[in-house]
Image (cartoon, rainbow, N blue to C red; front, side):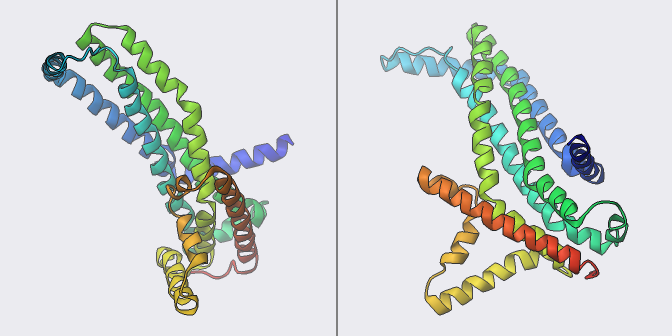
Length: 288
């Protein structure tokens, strides 16, 4: 058991070593940039924020509404949520770019001949690349985004607390941001599961395409869509496929339909990955 876990951990580290920019440098750099910009905004815009808050308070008083400017914890925490989910979506995009090039690049630079000489099966290699691009990369970006969002919430809440002279605002905003981790994680995992068939298809194309995998991964479904429309005056299958490239599509269905669709999508993805493993085993000499 430990040997198997160590092997999978090694393969994950190998992917991270081979792609350091995609794996952690890009999200850390982008997160650091957002934190610096947030700090600059608080430091430079403090006087402007005070003026805007004063004008807003005066306007509310004129309308006869009792408002409390200290109740800013939720809006500030929402900014952290936006950063968290934004990083998650960026991770999905980066993960897709990774699976689209993973098997193609090793054939193009002939490194596949070296990897085939190692005591790793085709199944292990394909699954390692699949899981790294499909789950590990998006979830890594998501977690880095959550941490970066928390720092931004902290900086923003400190600035807002100084503006309204209420230090309790800091604890309120941070508590809301921390409490949102579970729901955000659930949303992220649903999105990851939803796009599984599209990621699996991209990895299959990466295995057998001789050149320009992006053209094949989009072009084949487009041609299939045209043929299906011509033959049946509808495009049920290809519409289903294209919906899996859109993470917002899962939000438009009811909960029961969503679970059924997620299960169907995972089954289809597993079949496609099985085809990818077969293709790598029998067509490894198909070099670009």
